[in-house]
Length: 236
View 1 (cartoon, one colour):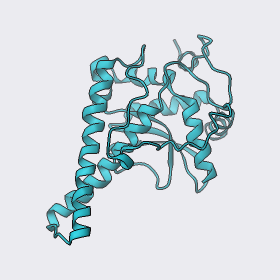
View 2 (view 1 turned 90 degrees about the horizontal axis):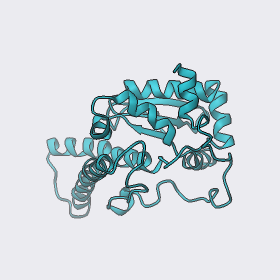
View 3 (view 1 turned 120 degrees about the vertical axis):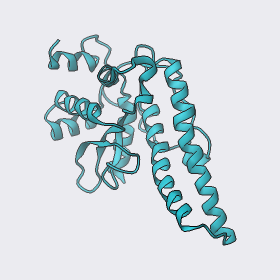
View 4 (view 1 turned 60 degrees about the horizontal axis):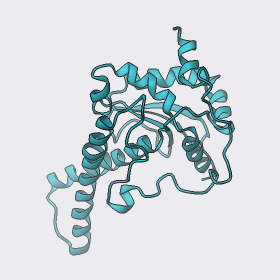
């Protein structure tokens, strides 16, 4: 299968499983994509899907959610509690500990958000980009196929994360790579599509076949959710 045919099949068009473009009134709600975030509640955000048949098994998703996302949240909350105690009680923190805490605060806080965007951004079946997102992608990359090829290539070389973002300063879309949670993305950018490229995200189901995992991901992007993120970002 050549690249174009693969991308066509991956988009869901070949199977006839694409949904009608556009959002309903309910989809257009002003619901924040960060509603229920662990950064707000201090608790794990529940999974939308315990498994994604044809892509990720429950055996793959469960430890990723509990151990990796959960571990990041636990570390972030722990740092926040120590900093709050220092603020309220004037409890001193030695310089070495403070440096580590500030690194953990940004790295693990970003990990929490990226995991939530990743888990919330997948669908059980193929969807089609809503019209405004499709137009933005075509304007920036030339076509949906060209975007997909660049996104897949980005995810394959990423040691950590790859994401499609929109930047509110110039309104442009970018595929960016982050190999450490606190590095990579442009400041103020809003992630629309996020893939976790760390080995823990796919090893149970795919072993060392990272390319297969990345390529299949295209078929399970929740474009309605991506559209919601996009519309909220450009309104800001």
